[in-house]
Image (tube, helix red, strand yellow):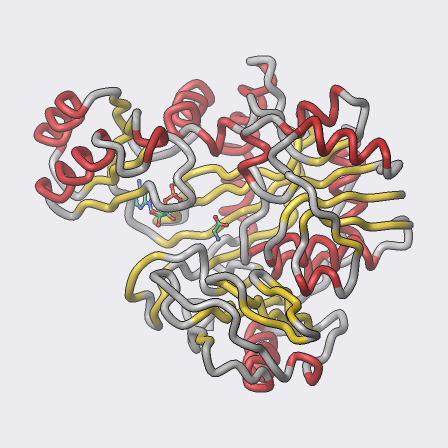
Length: 420
Ligand code: AMP
Ligand code: GLY
């Protein structure tokens, strides 16, 4: 099989790594890729938001299967263009990607599916949103309806904070994403993520994870794209996972199919768990980053077979072969992230890190310059290890972190603390 992966982050490096474990992969191209991906696969400069260009490239290169990593091309309909061109693709249509691209859409699907989630109101003007907050009070959660690169969610602990967030959003702080606003009940509990493959009809859980969104140790400081992750999430017990599958994912996937927009790809359900009951926080329509790095290390080669089965509508007969294992990813970021940070510093010591089915350093924001790996993003590396316990995975991952010589970078030293 000739395979094309779209994306350039740590998630796509992990997907590429897993796909390459599988002997069914004859050739792998990643577009645009990064310096780490270039060490294991061919990279191609391609505008992945241009569905026509991607379809032409895939046809020219005799690609049999395309895996789309990030949400932006999915929301822009790149999977639709590829399927119209007869190219087998893993990832939802633009219509189905609304589960991530529109928070009010997701709330409507949950209502119709009777899936447990936070109570909410949906507003297209600031005055009605403020009236709603005056009635319901704080704490509450104010969300820009559209894609805002993970930044459009404000947890307002007081009414004035909520009003400020509403005013900001309607005055364009998040561009078009904030033209509509959803205000939710604040849910308490512990968060975990569940990753579920869907082929439009059937669903298959491929594992749980927890990430660490805050930049500082003990979950302090500003939010980031994720400073680390581990899988499985102990809070998502078998029983709670079954509840999430039966009460949330199953009815939502059925509702999508009934509306003529079957969901095919990976549904990443953010769940809030309290008193043994999961409620939906949000859906994403792609793998999480860095959760994907931990998941791929656990799934290995079978990840390709499973994604292929989802794309071909064969999930009914698919199953995951689980090892009794744990994986953990520590993100190394450029000092200053998630604020301003410098680019171009040299990262040394990577060659001393083991690369096998228990250890991988996935690259997120790196560039090869004069034969050296340099930092070119905020989140730069995802140092990932697997073990028979979470502690073993953590010890291995931090062992690798200590071998990397990059004074301009930093990481959290407490990834996995909730579970350890
Ligand atoms: P989202 O982008 O929707 O995942 O929101 C980002 C983060 O905000 C989530 O991971 C939660 O930690 C938090 N959050 C979002 N909605 C709620 C809610 N209704 N109650 C409590 N926390 C929330
Ligand atoms: N790690 C959070 C995300 O991928 O959205």
